[in-house]
Image 1 (tube, one colour):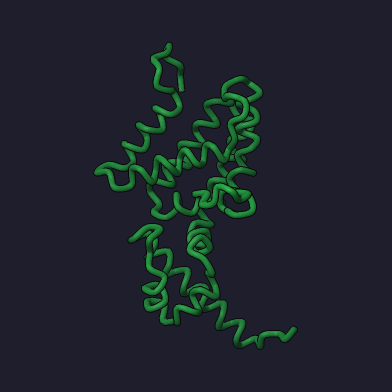
Image 2 (cartoon, helix red, strand yellow):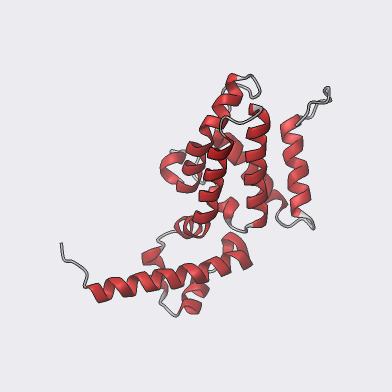
Length: 195
């Protein structure tokens, strides 16, 4: 195996950082549909260089979303073992929903594209959230606050669907929140249950 000369490695690191900075702005402006060619042009590199660093759109979205995903993982750890298990799970899911509505491209980074694939292997963002929120969900299930068989992947998929369905609504945050509350409470009238 030939080692890459130090100068080339430094160039590759600089290119990666420049491409990522441009990609963050493009994804913020255009969501998951951000143009890889425009990212390359703005970063002053060839499209092959962008594809070398980010071989798929998913890889690009995951890199752009990494800090936000890490913050959501930290939040899940902070909430684990605190207060009412249903309330803490819903508080964390609210955070995921809020981030996903406010940060274009995050919902697409969390989506599971191939139903036949193993989501943990295919999606690093969702895998990190599943691991971090697993204890929150497990505790809520043990307390009978969540139906058995519900997975963190189910909850992430629900949020992704809501966010993608509401992203073009005049008030996407309010619409997403309404749909999420509807999903949490269900369609049938029931005695009021505190959040």
